[in-house]
Length: 526
Image (cartoon, rainbow, N blue to C red; front, top):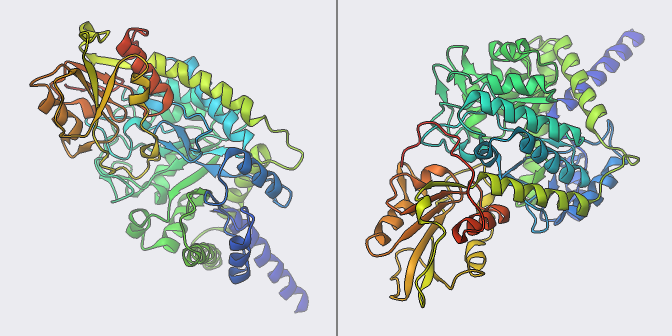
């Protein structure tokens, strides 16, 4: 009797250890300090997160991950969203930001996409971060979807597939795990999955091609989204056995990751967070994601405690589901084995050699400049360039404020770089939206990042107001459909608000660079 009880207890302990591997963030203390110590004292475990209110640079992140790797088992594996362009968790001023996927689509160069993956991978690995929740494999649409937009490489499935595969190769050659997302694709989805549960009848033609290419390129992970595709199964993809079977039929043998289950729009259709986690693992998901492991650090102590306890609830729900037969014991074992293999391949230990932050940042800067030069697109009005002002006149620069409607977006925090860059070649007068234009102005540059609400572009409306009296150049630093309906003489798509793209736009306006990009989205109208 005693022997049987001991065996049962050992089995429960082993099950618990495997289930713990399937839920991220984990339970390790990653950020040093009193707040994390207090959290561990109150809950018994660590937060599994690195808060950017405590870790404020790439160098300090490297120190934190180095220290944490000494106590991690299996090897430390920290995940992050670092896509380039619109979504980057490592967005400190000293970290070079690359133009994103749509810029690479506008350039159309697979070698450049591979260099971009390698550059981002180098930056991450130098900081001790070796798992990237990228690339986006979704197809772009016109008008853009708020959840995708410039995060996509474009709308042509074959070109997107080619660039996705190249990016995956570059990232993983740098020693960072890639995650192709959001299977089976958000193309055709009209609502933001962060805000509502998308449902579509069919996938767009070619939607699976980029995922197949990512799998063939060896992507370590694939993230399954929360969208329902009725032609596959009338159930959210991350809880759909048929959807995950489609992924496995593509030949994928790596880790299947869920979309962030902590988002209410993701878990509520499945009956709440614990039930959503159980449904996902039962369907074939190997690892349920409750949040990224590098956060902005804005949570209060009570919110952190609640997050840790939510995680514990999810772990308990999964263990209970195995005990009750809702999830097979073999299903958990195979998932845990895949997760352990991911840690073994990409995790870091104290003996792991990491590249230098400064060196990888230098390389990233060179790649960013190349992408920007190859991607900036003159959509209309090339005959008006270079922009030449009459003697004694100035260039007005009007920035249209962001509307801030996109959830998966860190680039709106980027500084406004255009006026000082333009100022190197022109006398520049910054003006507010709706402001009066002085008589000394010879031309106006209207620009914005995210100015579109529904079908109306605030930047295009401002260009229409000003075009009655002045030559106008409109620049879209975000989604290219910000240019739609604009009467501006010159329309330029930059695809990214970061320094390299703003500098390339300035060079195009002054005639020092010939724009070579083309809009990688079918159906675009101006």
